[in-house]
Image (cartoon, rainbow, N blue to C red):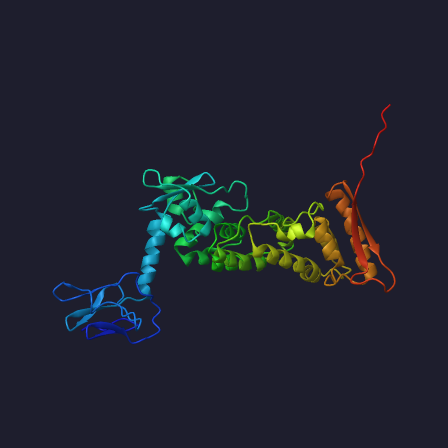
Length: 407
């Protein structure tokens, strides 16, 4: 009799037993009958015992005792199944039963796998089959951050052969690919992490991937990218879901915050709440967005980078460098709410209250050139001990339109 693979199984009195009671393999949804040496199915002795949670796994035979075979399979077989689903199912679209339309492309996919996403499962359930196929549409045109790279880049074969779209220069994994295999976790890049995070939050059910993508995003925040990141946060978050993907993407985002990316990050997080005063704090707090909890995390990451990390990285207290001018340029682009919070934050170590006041005044002068003439911003330095928190306060009021008397 051949030696079974780990975890080892053996047959006693026609019933399969495992030497490892903590077997990682769950029982099948249906009982598997052990086959006798005569090819006859034994539906009694070879099935799972409900009382002791023992079962026979479906798979290749590894030996026989008393005329009954013991079926053994290991992680390698599971990997082979997942690889086949990903390569044949996702990349090549074989045996597809669902046509998914997004960004002008059509993807041949599989309803059972797509149902891992609550969002896609709802679309499938609400769409009757036509000609034996589901046909669903994901409206991504209104969400520019959910690009092909983030949504379905892993679908290389279909997009090259079926749709004739060249993708050799693009990342090879995506949110849709993650529904088929977690191999997508290995293919996040600084170029696609924001798109992956956004797509993951939209589709739902991908916390691990979102977490990794968030970390990559966080690490990419730098001086050169912070404005882009602020713009990205400003786009908001669409629906939520895909927890694993979003968690992965969030981790990637978080780790991407740096001197080179801080401007992009400022633009991104600033857009998550209106800076024109049109919404109350409670409205801003409860306004739904596509990134779900990652929106607040990214706001916090970008804010901390602006007020804590950036002044240190730029060495703003140096009299020989241009760090202070660089910081002024970044602050001149911030939305008012973010600008006010940063200037007044106790974590913003720019010097004494007088130095903080002078910095804010210089920033406001620059902001007049970049933020338009519709509002008047001012900074006030409070004296005495009666104030709490920062002694420097930033205010804003809308300019009144001139009235002309007719007649």
